[in-house]
Length: 447
Image 1 (tube, rainbow, N blue to C red):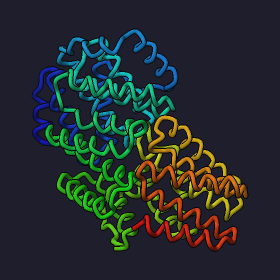
Image 2 (image 1 turned 180 degrees about the vertical axis):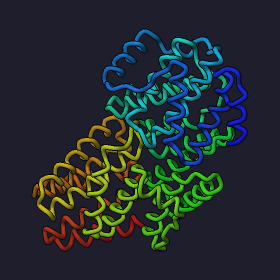
Image 3 (image 1 turned 90 degrees about the horizontal axis):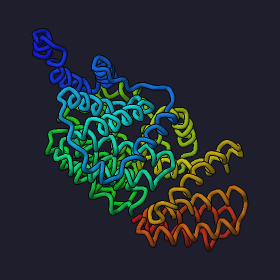
Image 4 (image 1 turned 90 degrees about the vertical axis):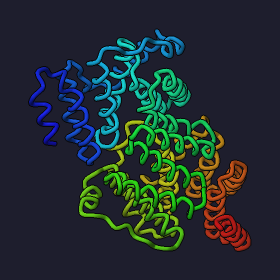
């Protein structure tokens, strides 16, 4: 901090301070002082004449679509390199802003994204440019334009090779892989996060290395990987977080570790430092993850009161997070949909039925882009909705479809879950033989 202040004091021109000011914003972000890092970055960009805030995202999206419609992929990939030193460092500030805003100011991410693309098309491509296209593709995908978003994340990966710099490769691969998870078979995308981790570590970006590890842990769980193996990955993630003092990510990883321990049966509780406790209490993204994880585990163990307490808190935080598309959005939609239909049957409250229906419609839409990954989940939500509606024949058919689809697409843990939920359905009907059969099959598949 003293050296930074000394360099800034002795610099004759503002431009001479930019490199050291960039390192200062990075240091603030790495020490979990994201709000300070973002504020400083915005201030520096403003002094350079670059404004990234706005009030109308829809208008900016249309502006970006119009701008990109006049450029082919080949033209973008063969654009001139950016040469203006001030603009190059400004792009680095924009890239750093995007990472921090994704965690605590997700609604502002789109404005930074559009500015990166605009400057890239005007002044040439920089090592930060692939980030802009990756985030733009992710933004489109989150708005429901999955195929168009998939197009731009593939363009971002191609551009990454063209710009000749790998300094942002870890983040580009992470963002692109999250979108790819909605199109390609989920199990096939796991390797991409290994690549993202390796690329980030090679460039010295421990934050993005950790983010790829966190994503790998979550994706592995959703893909049905062995829980003990995921727990080992999670332990390695937490160790790296501790070594690099990445407290926010460590608390995220500890929530997954806690769920894994409960599902495996060890019951190990994470040990939070005082700083970790503060993050858990104040960071909406971390808090949301905590309530989701707790609600999910409570649902699996059929603890109704714990489930409803945490799922209510989860929904209360829902509007404040996620500016781009993560696989977690689908994971949460699936599990909260199952929880909502369960609560709807018990409470008879219409709002829970509506929440379950929203999840079902989301999974049906995603099943159109990836039948492999989402079809069985959509069918299981259809089955649970039919159970709520007392439509016995439809429920029977959808449980069987969910089981068959999960088996076909290698989601053995969800094949087990479909058998278990079908067993509860038949138990309600008083069909003893079918109940026992499905419980036994669920037990077999869980093992």
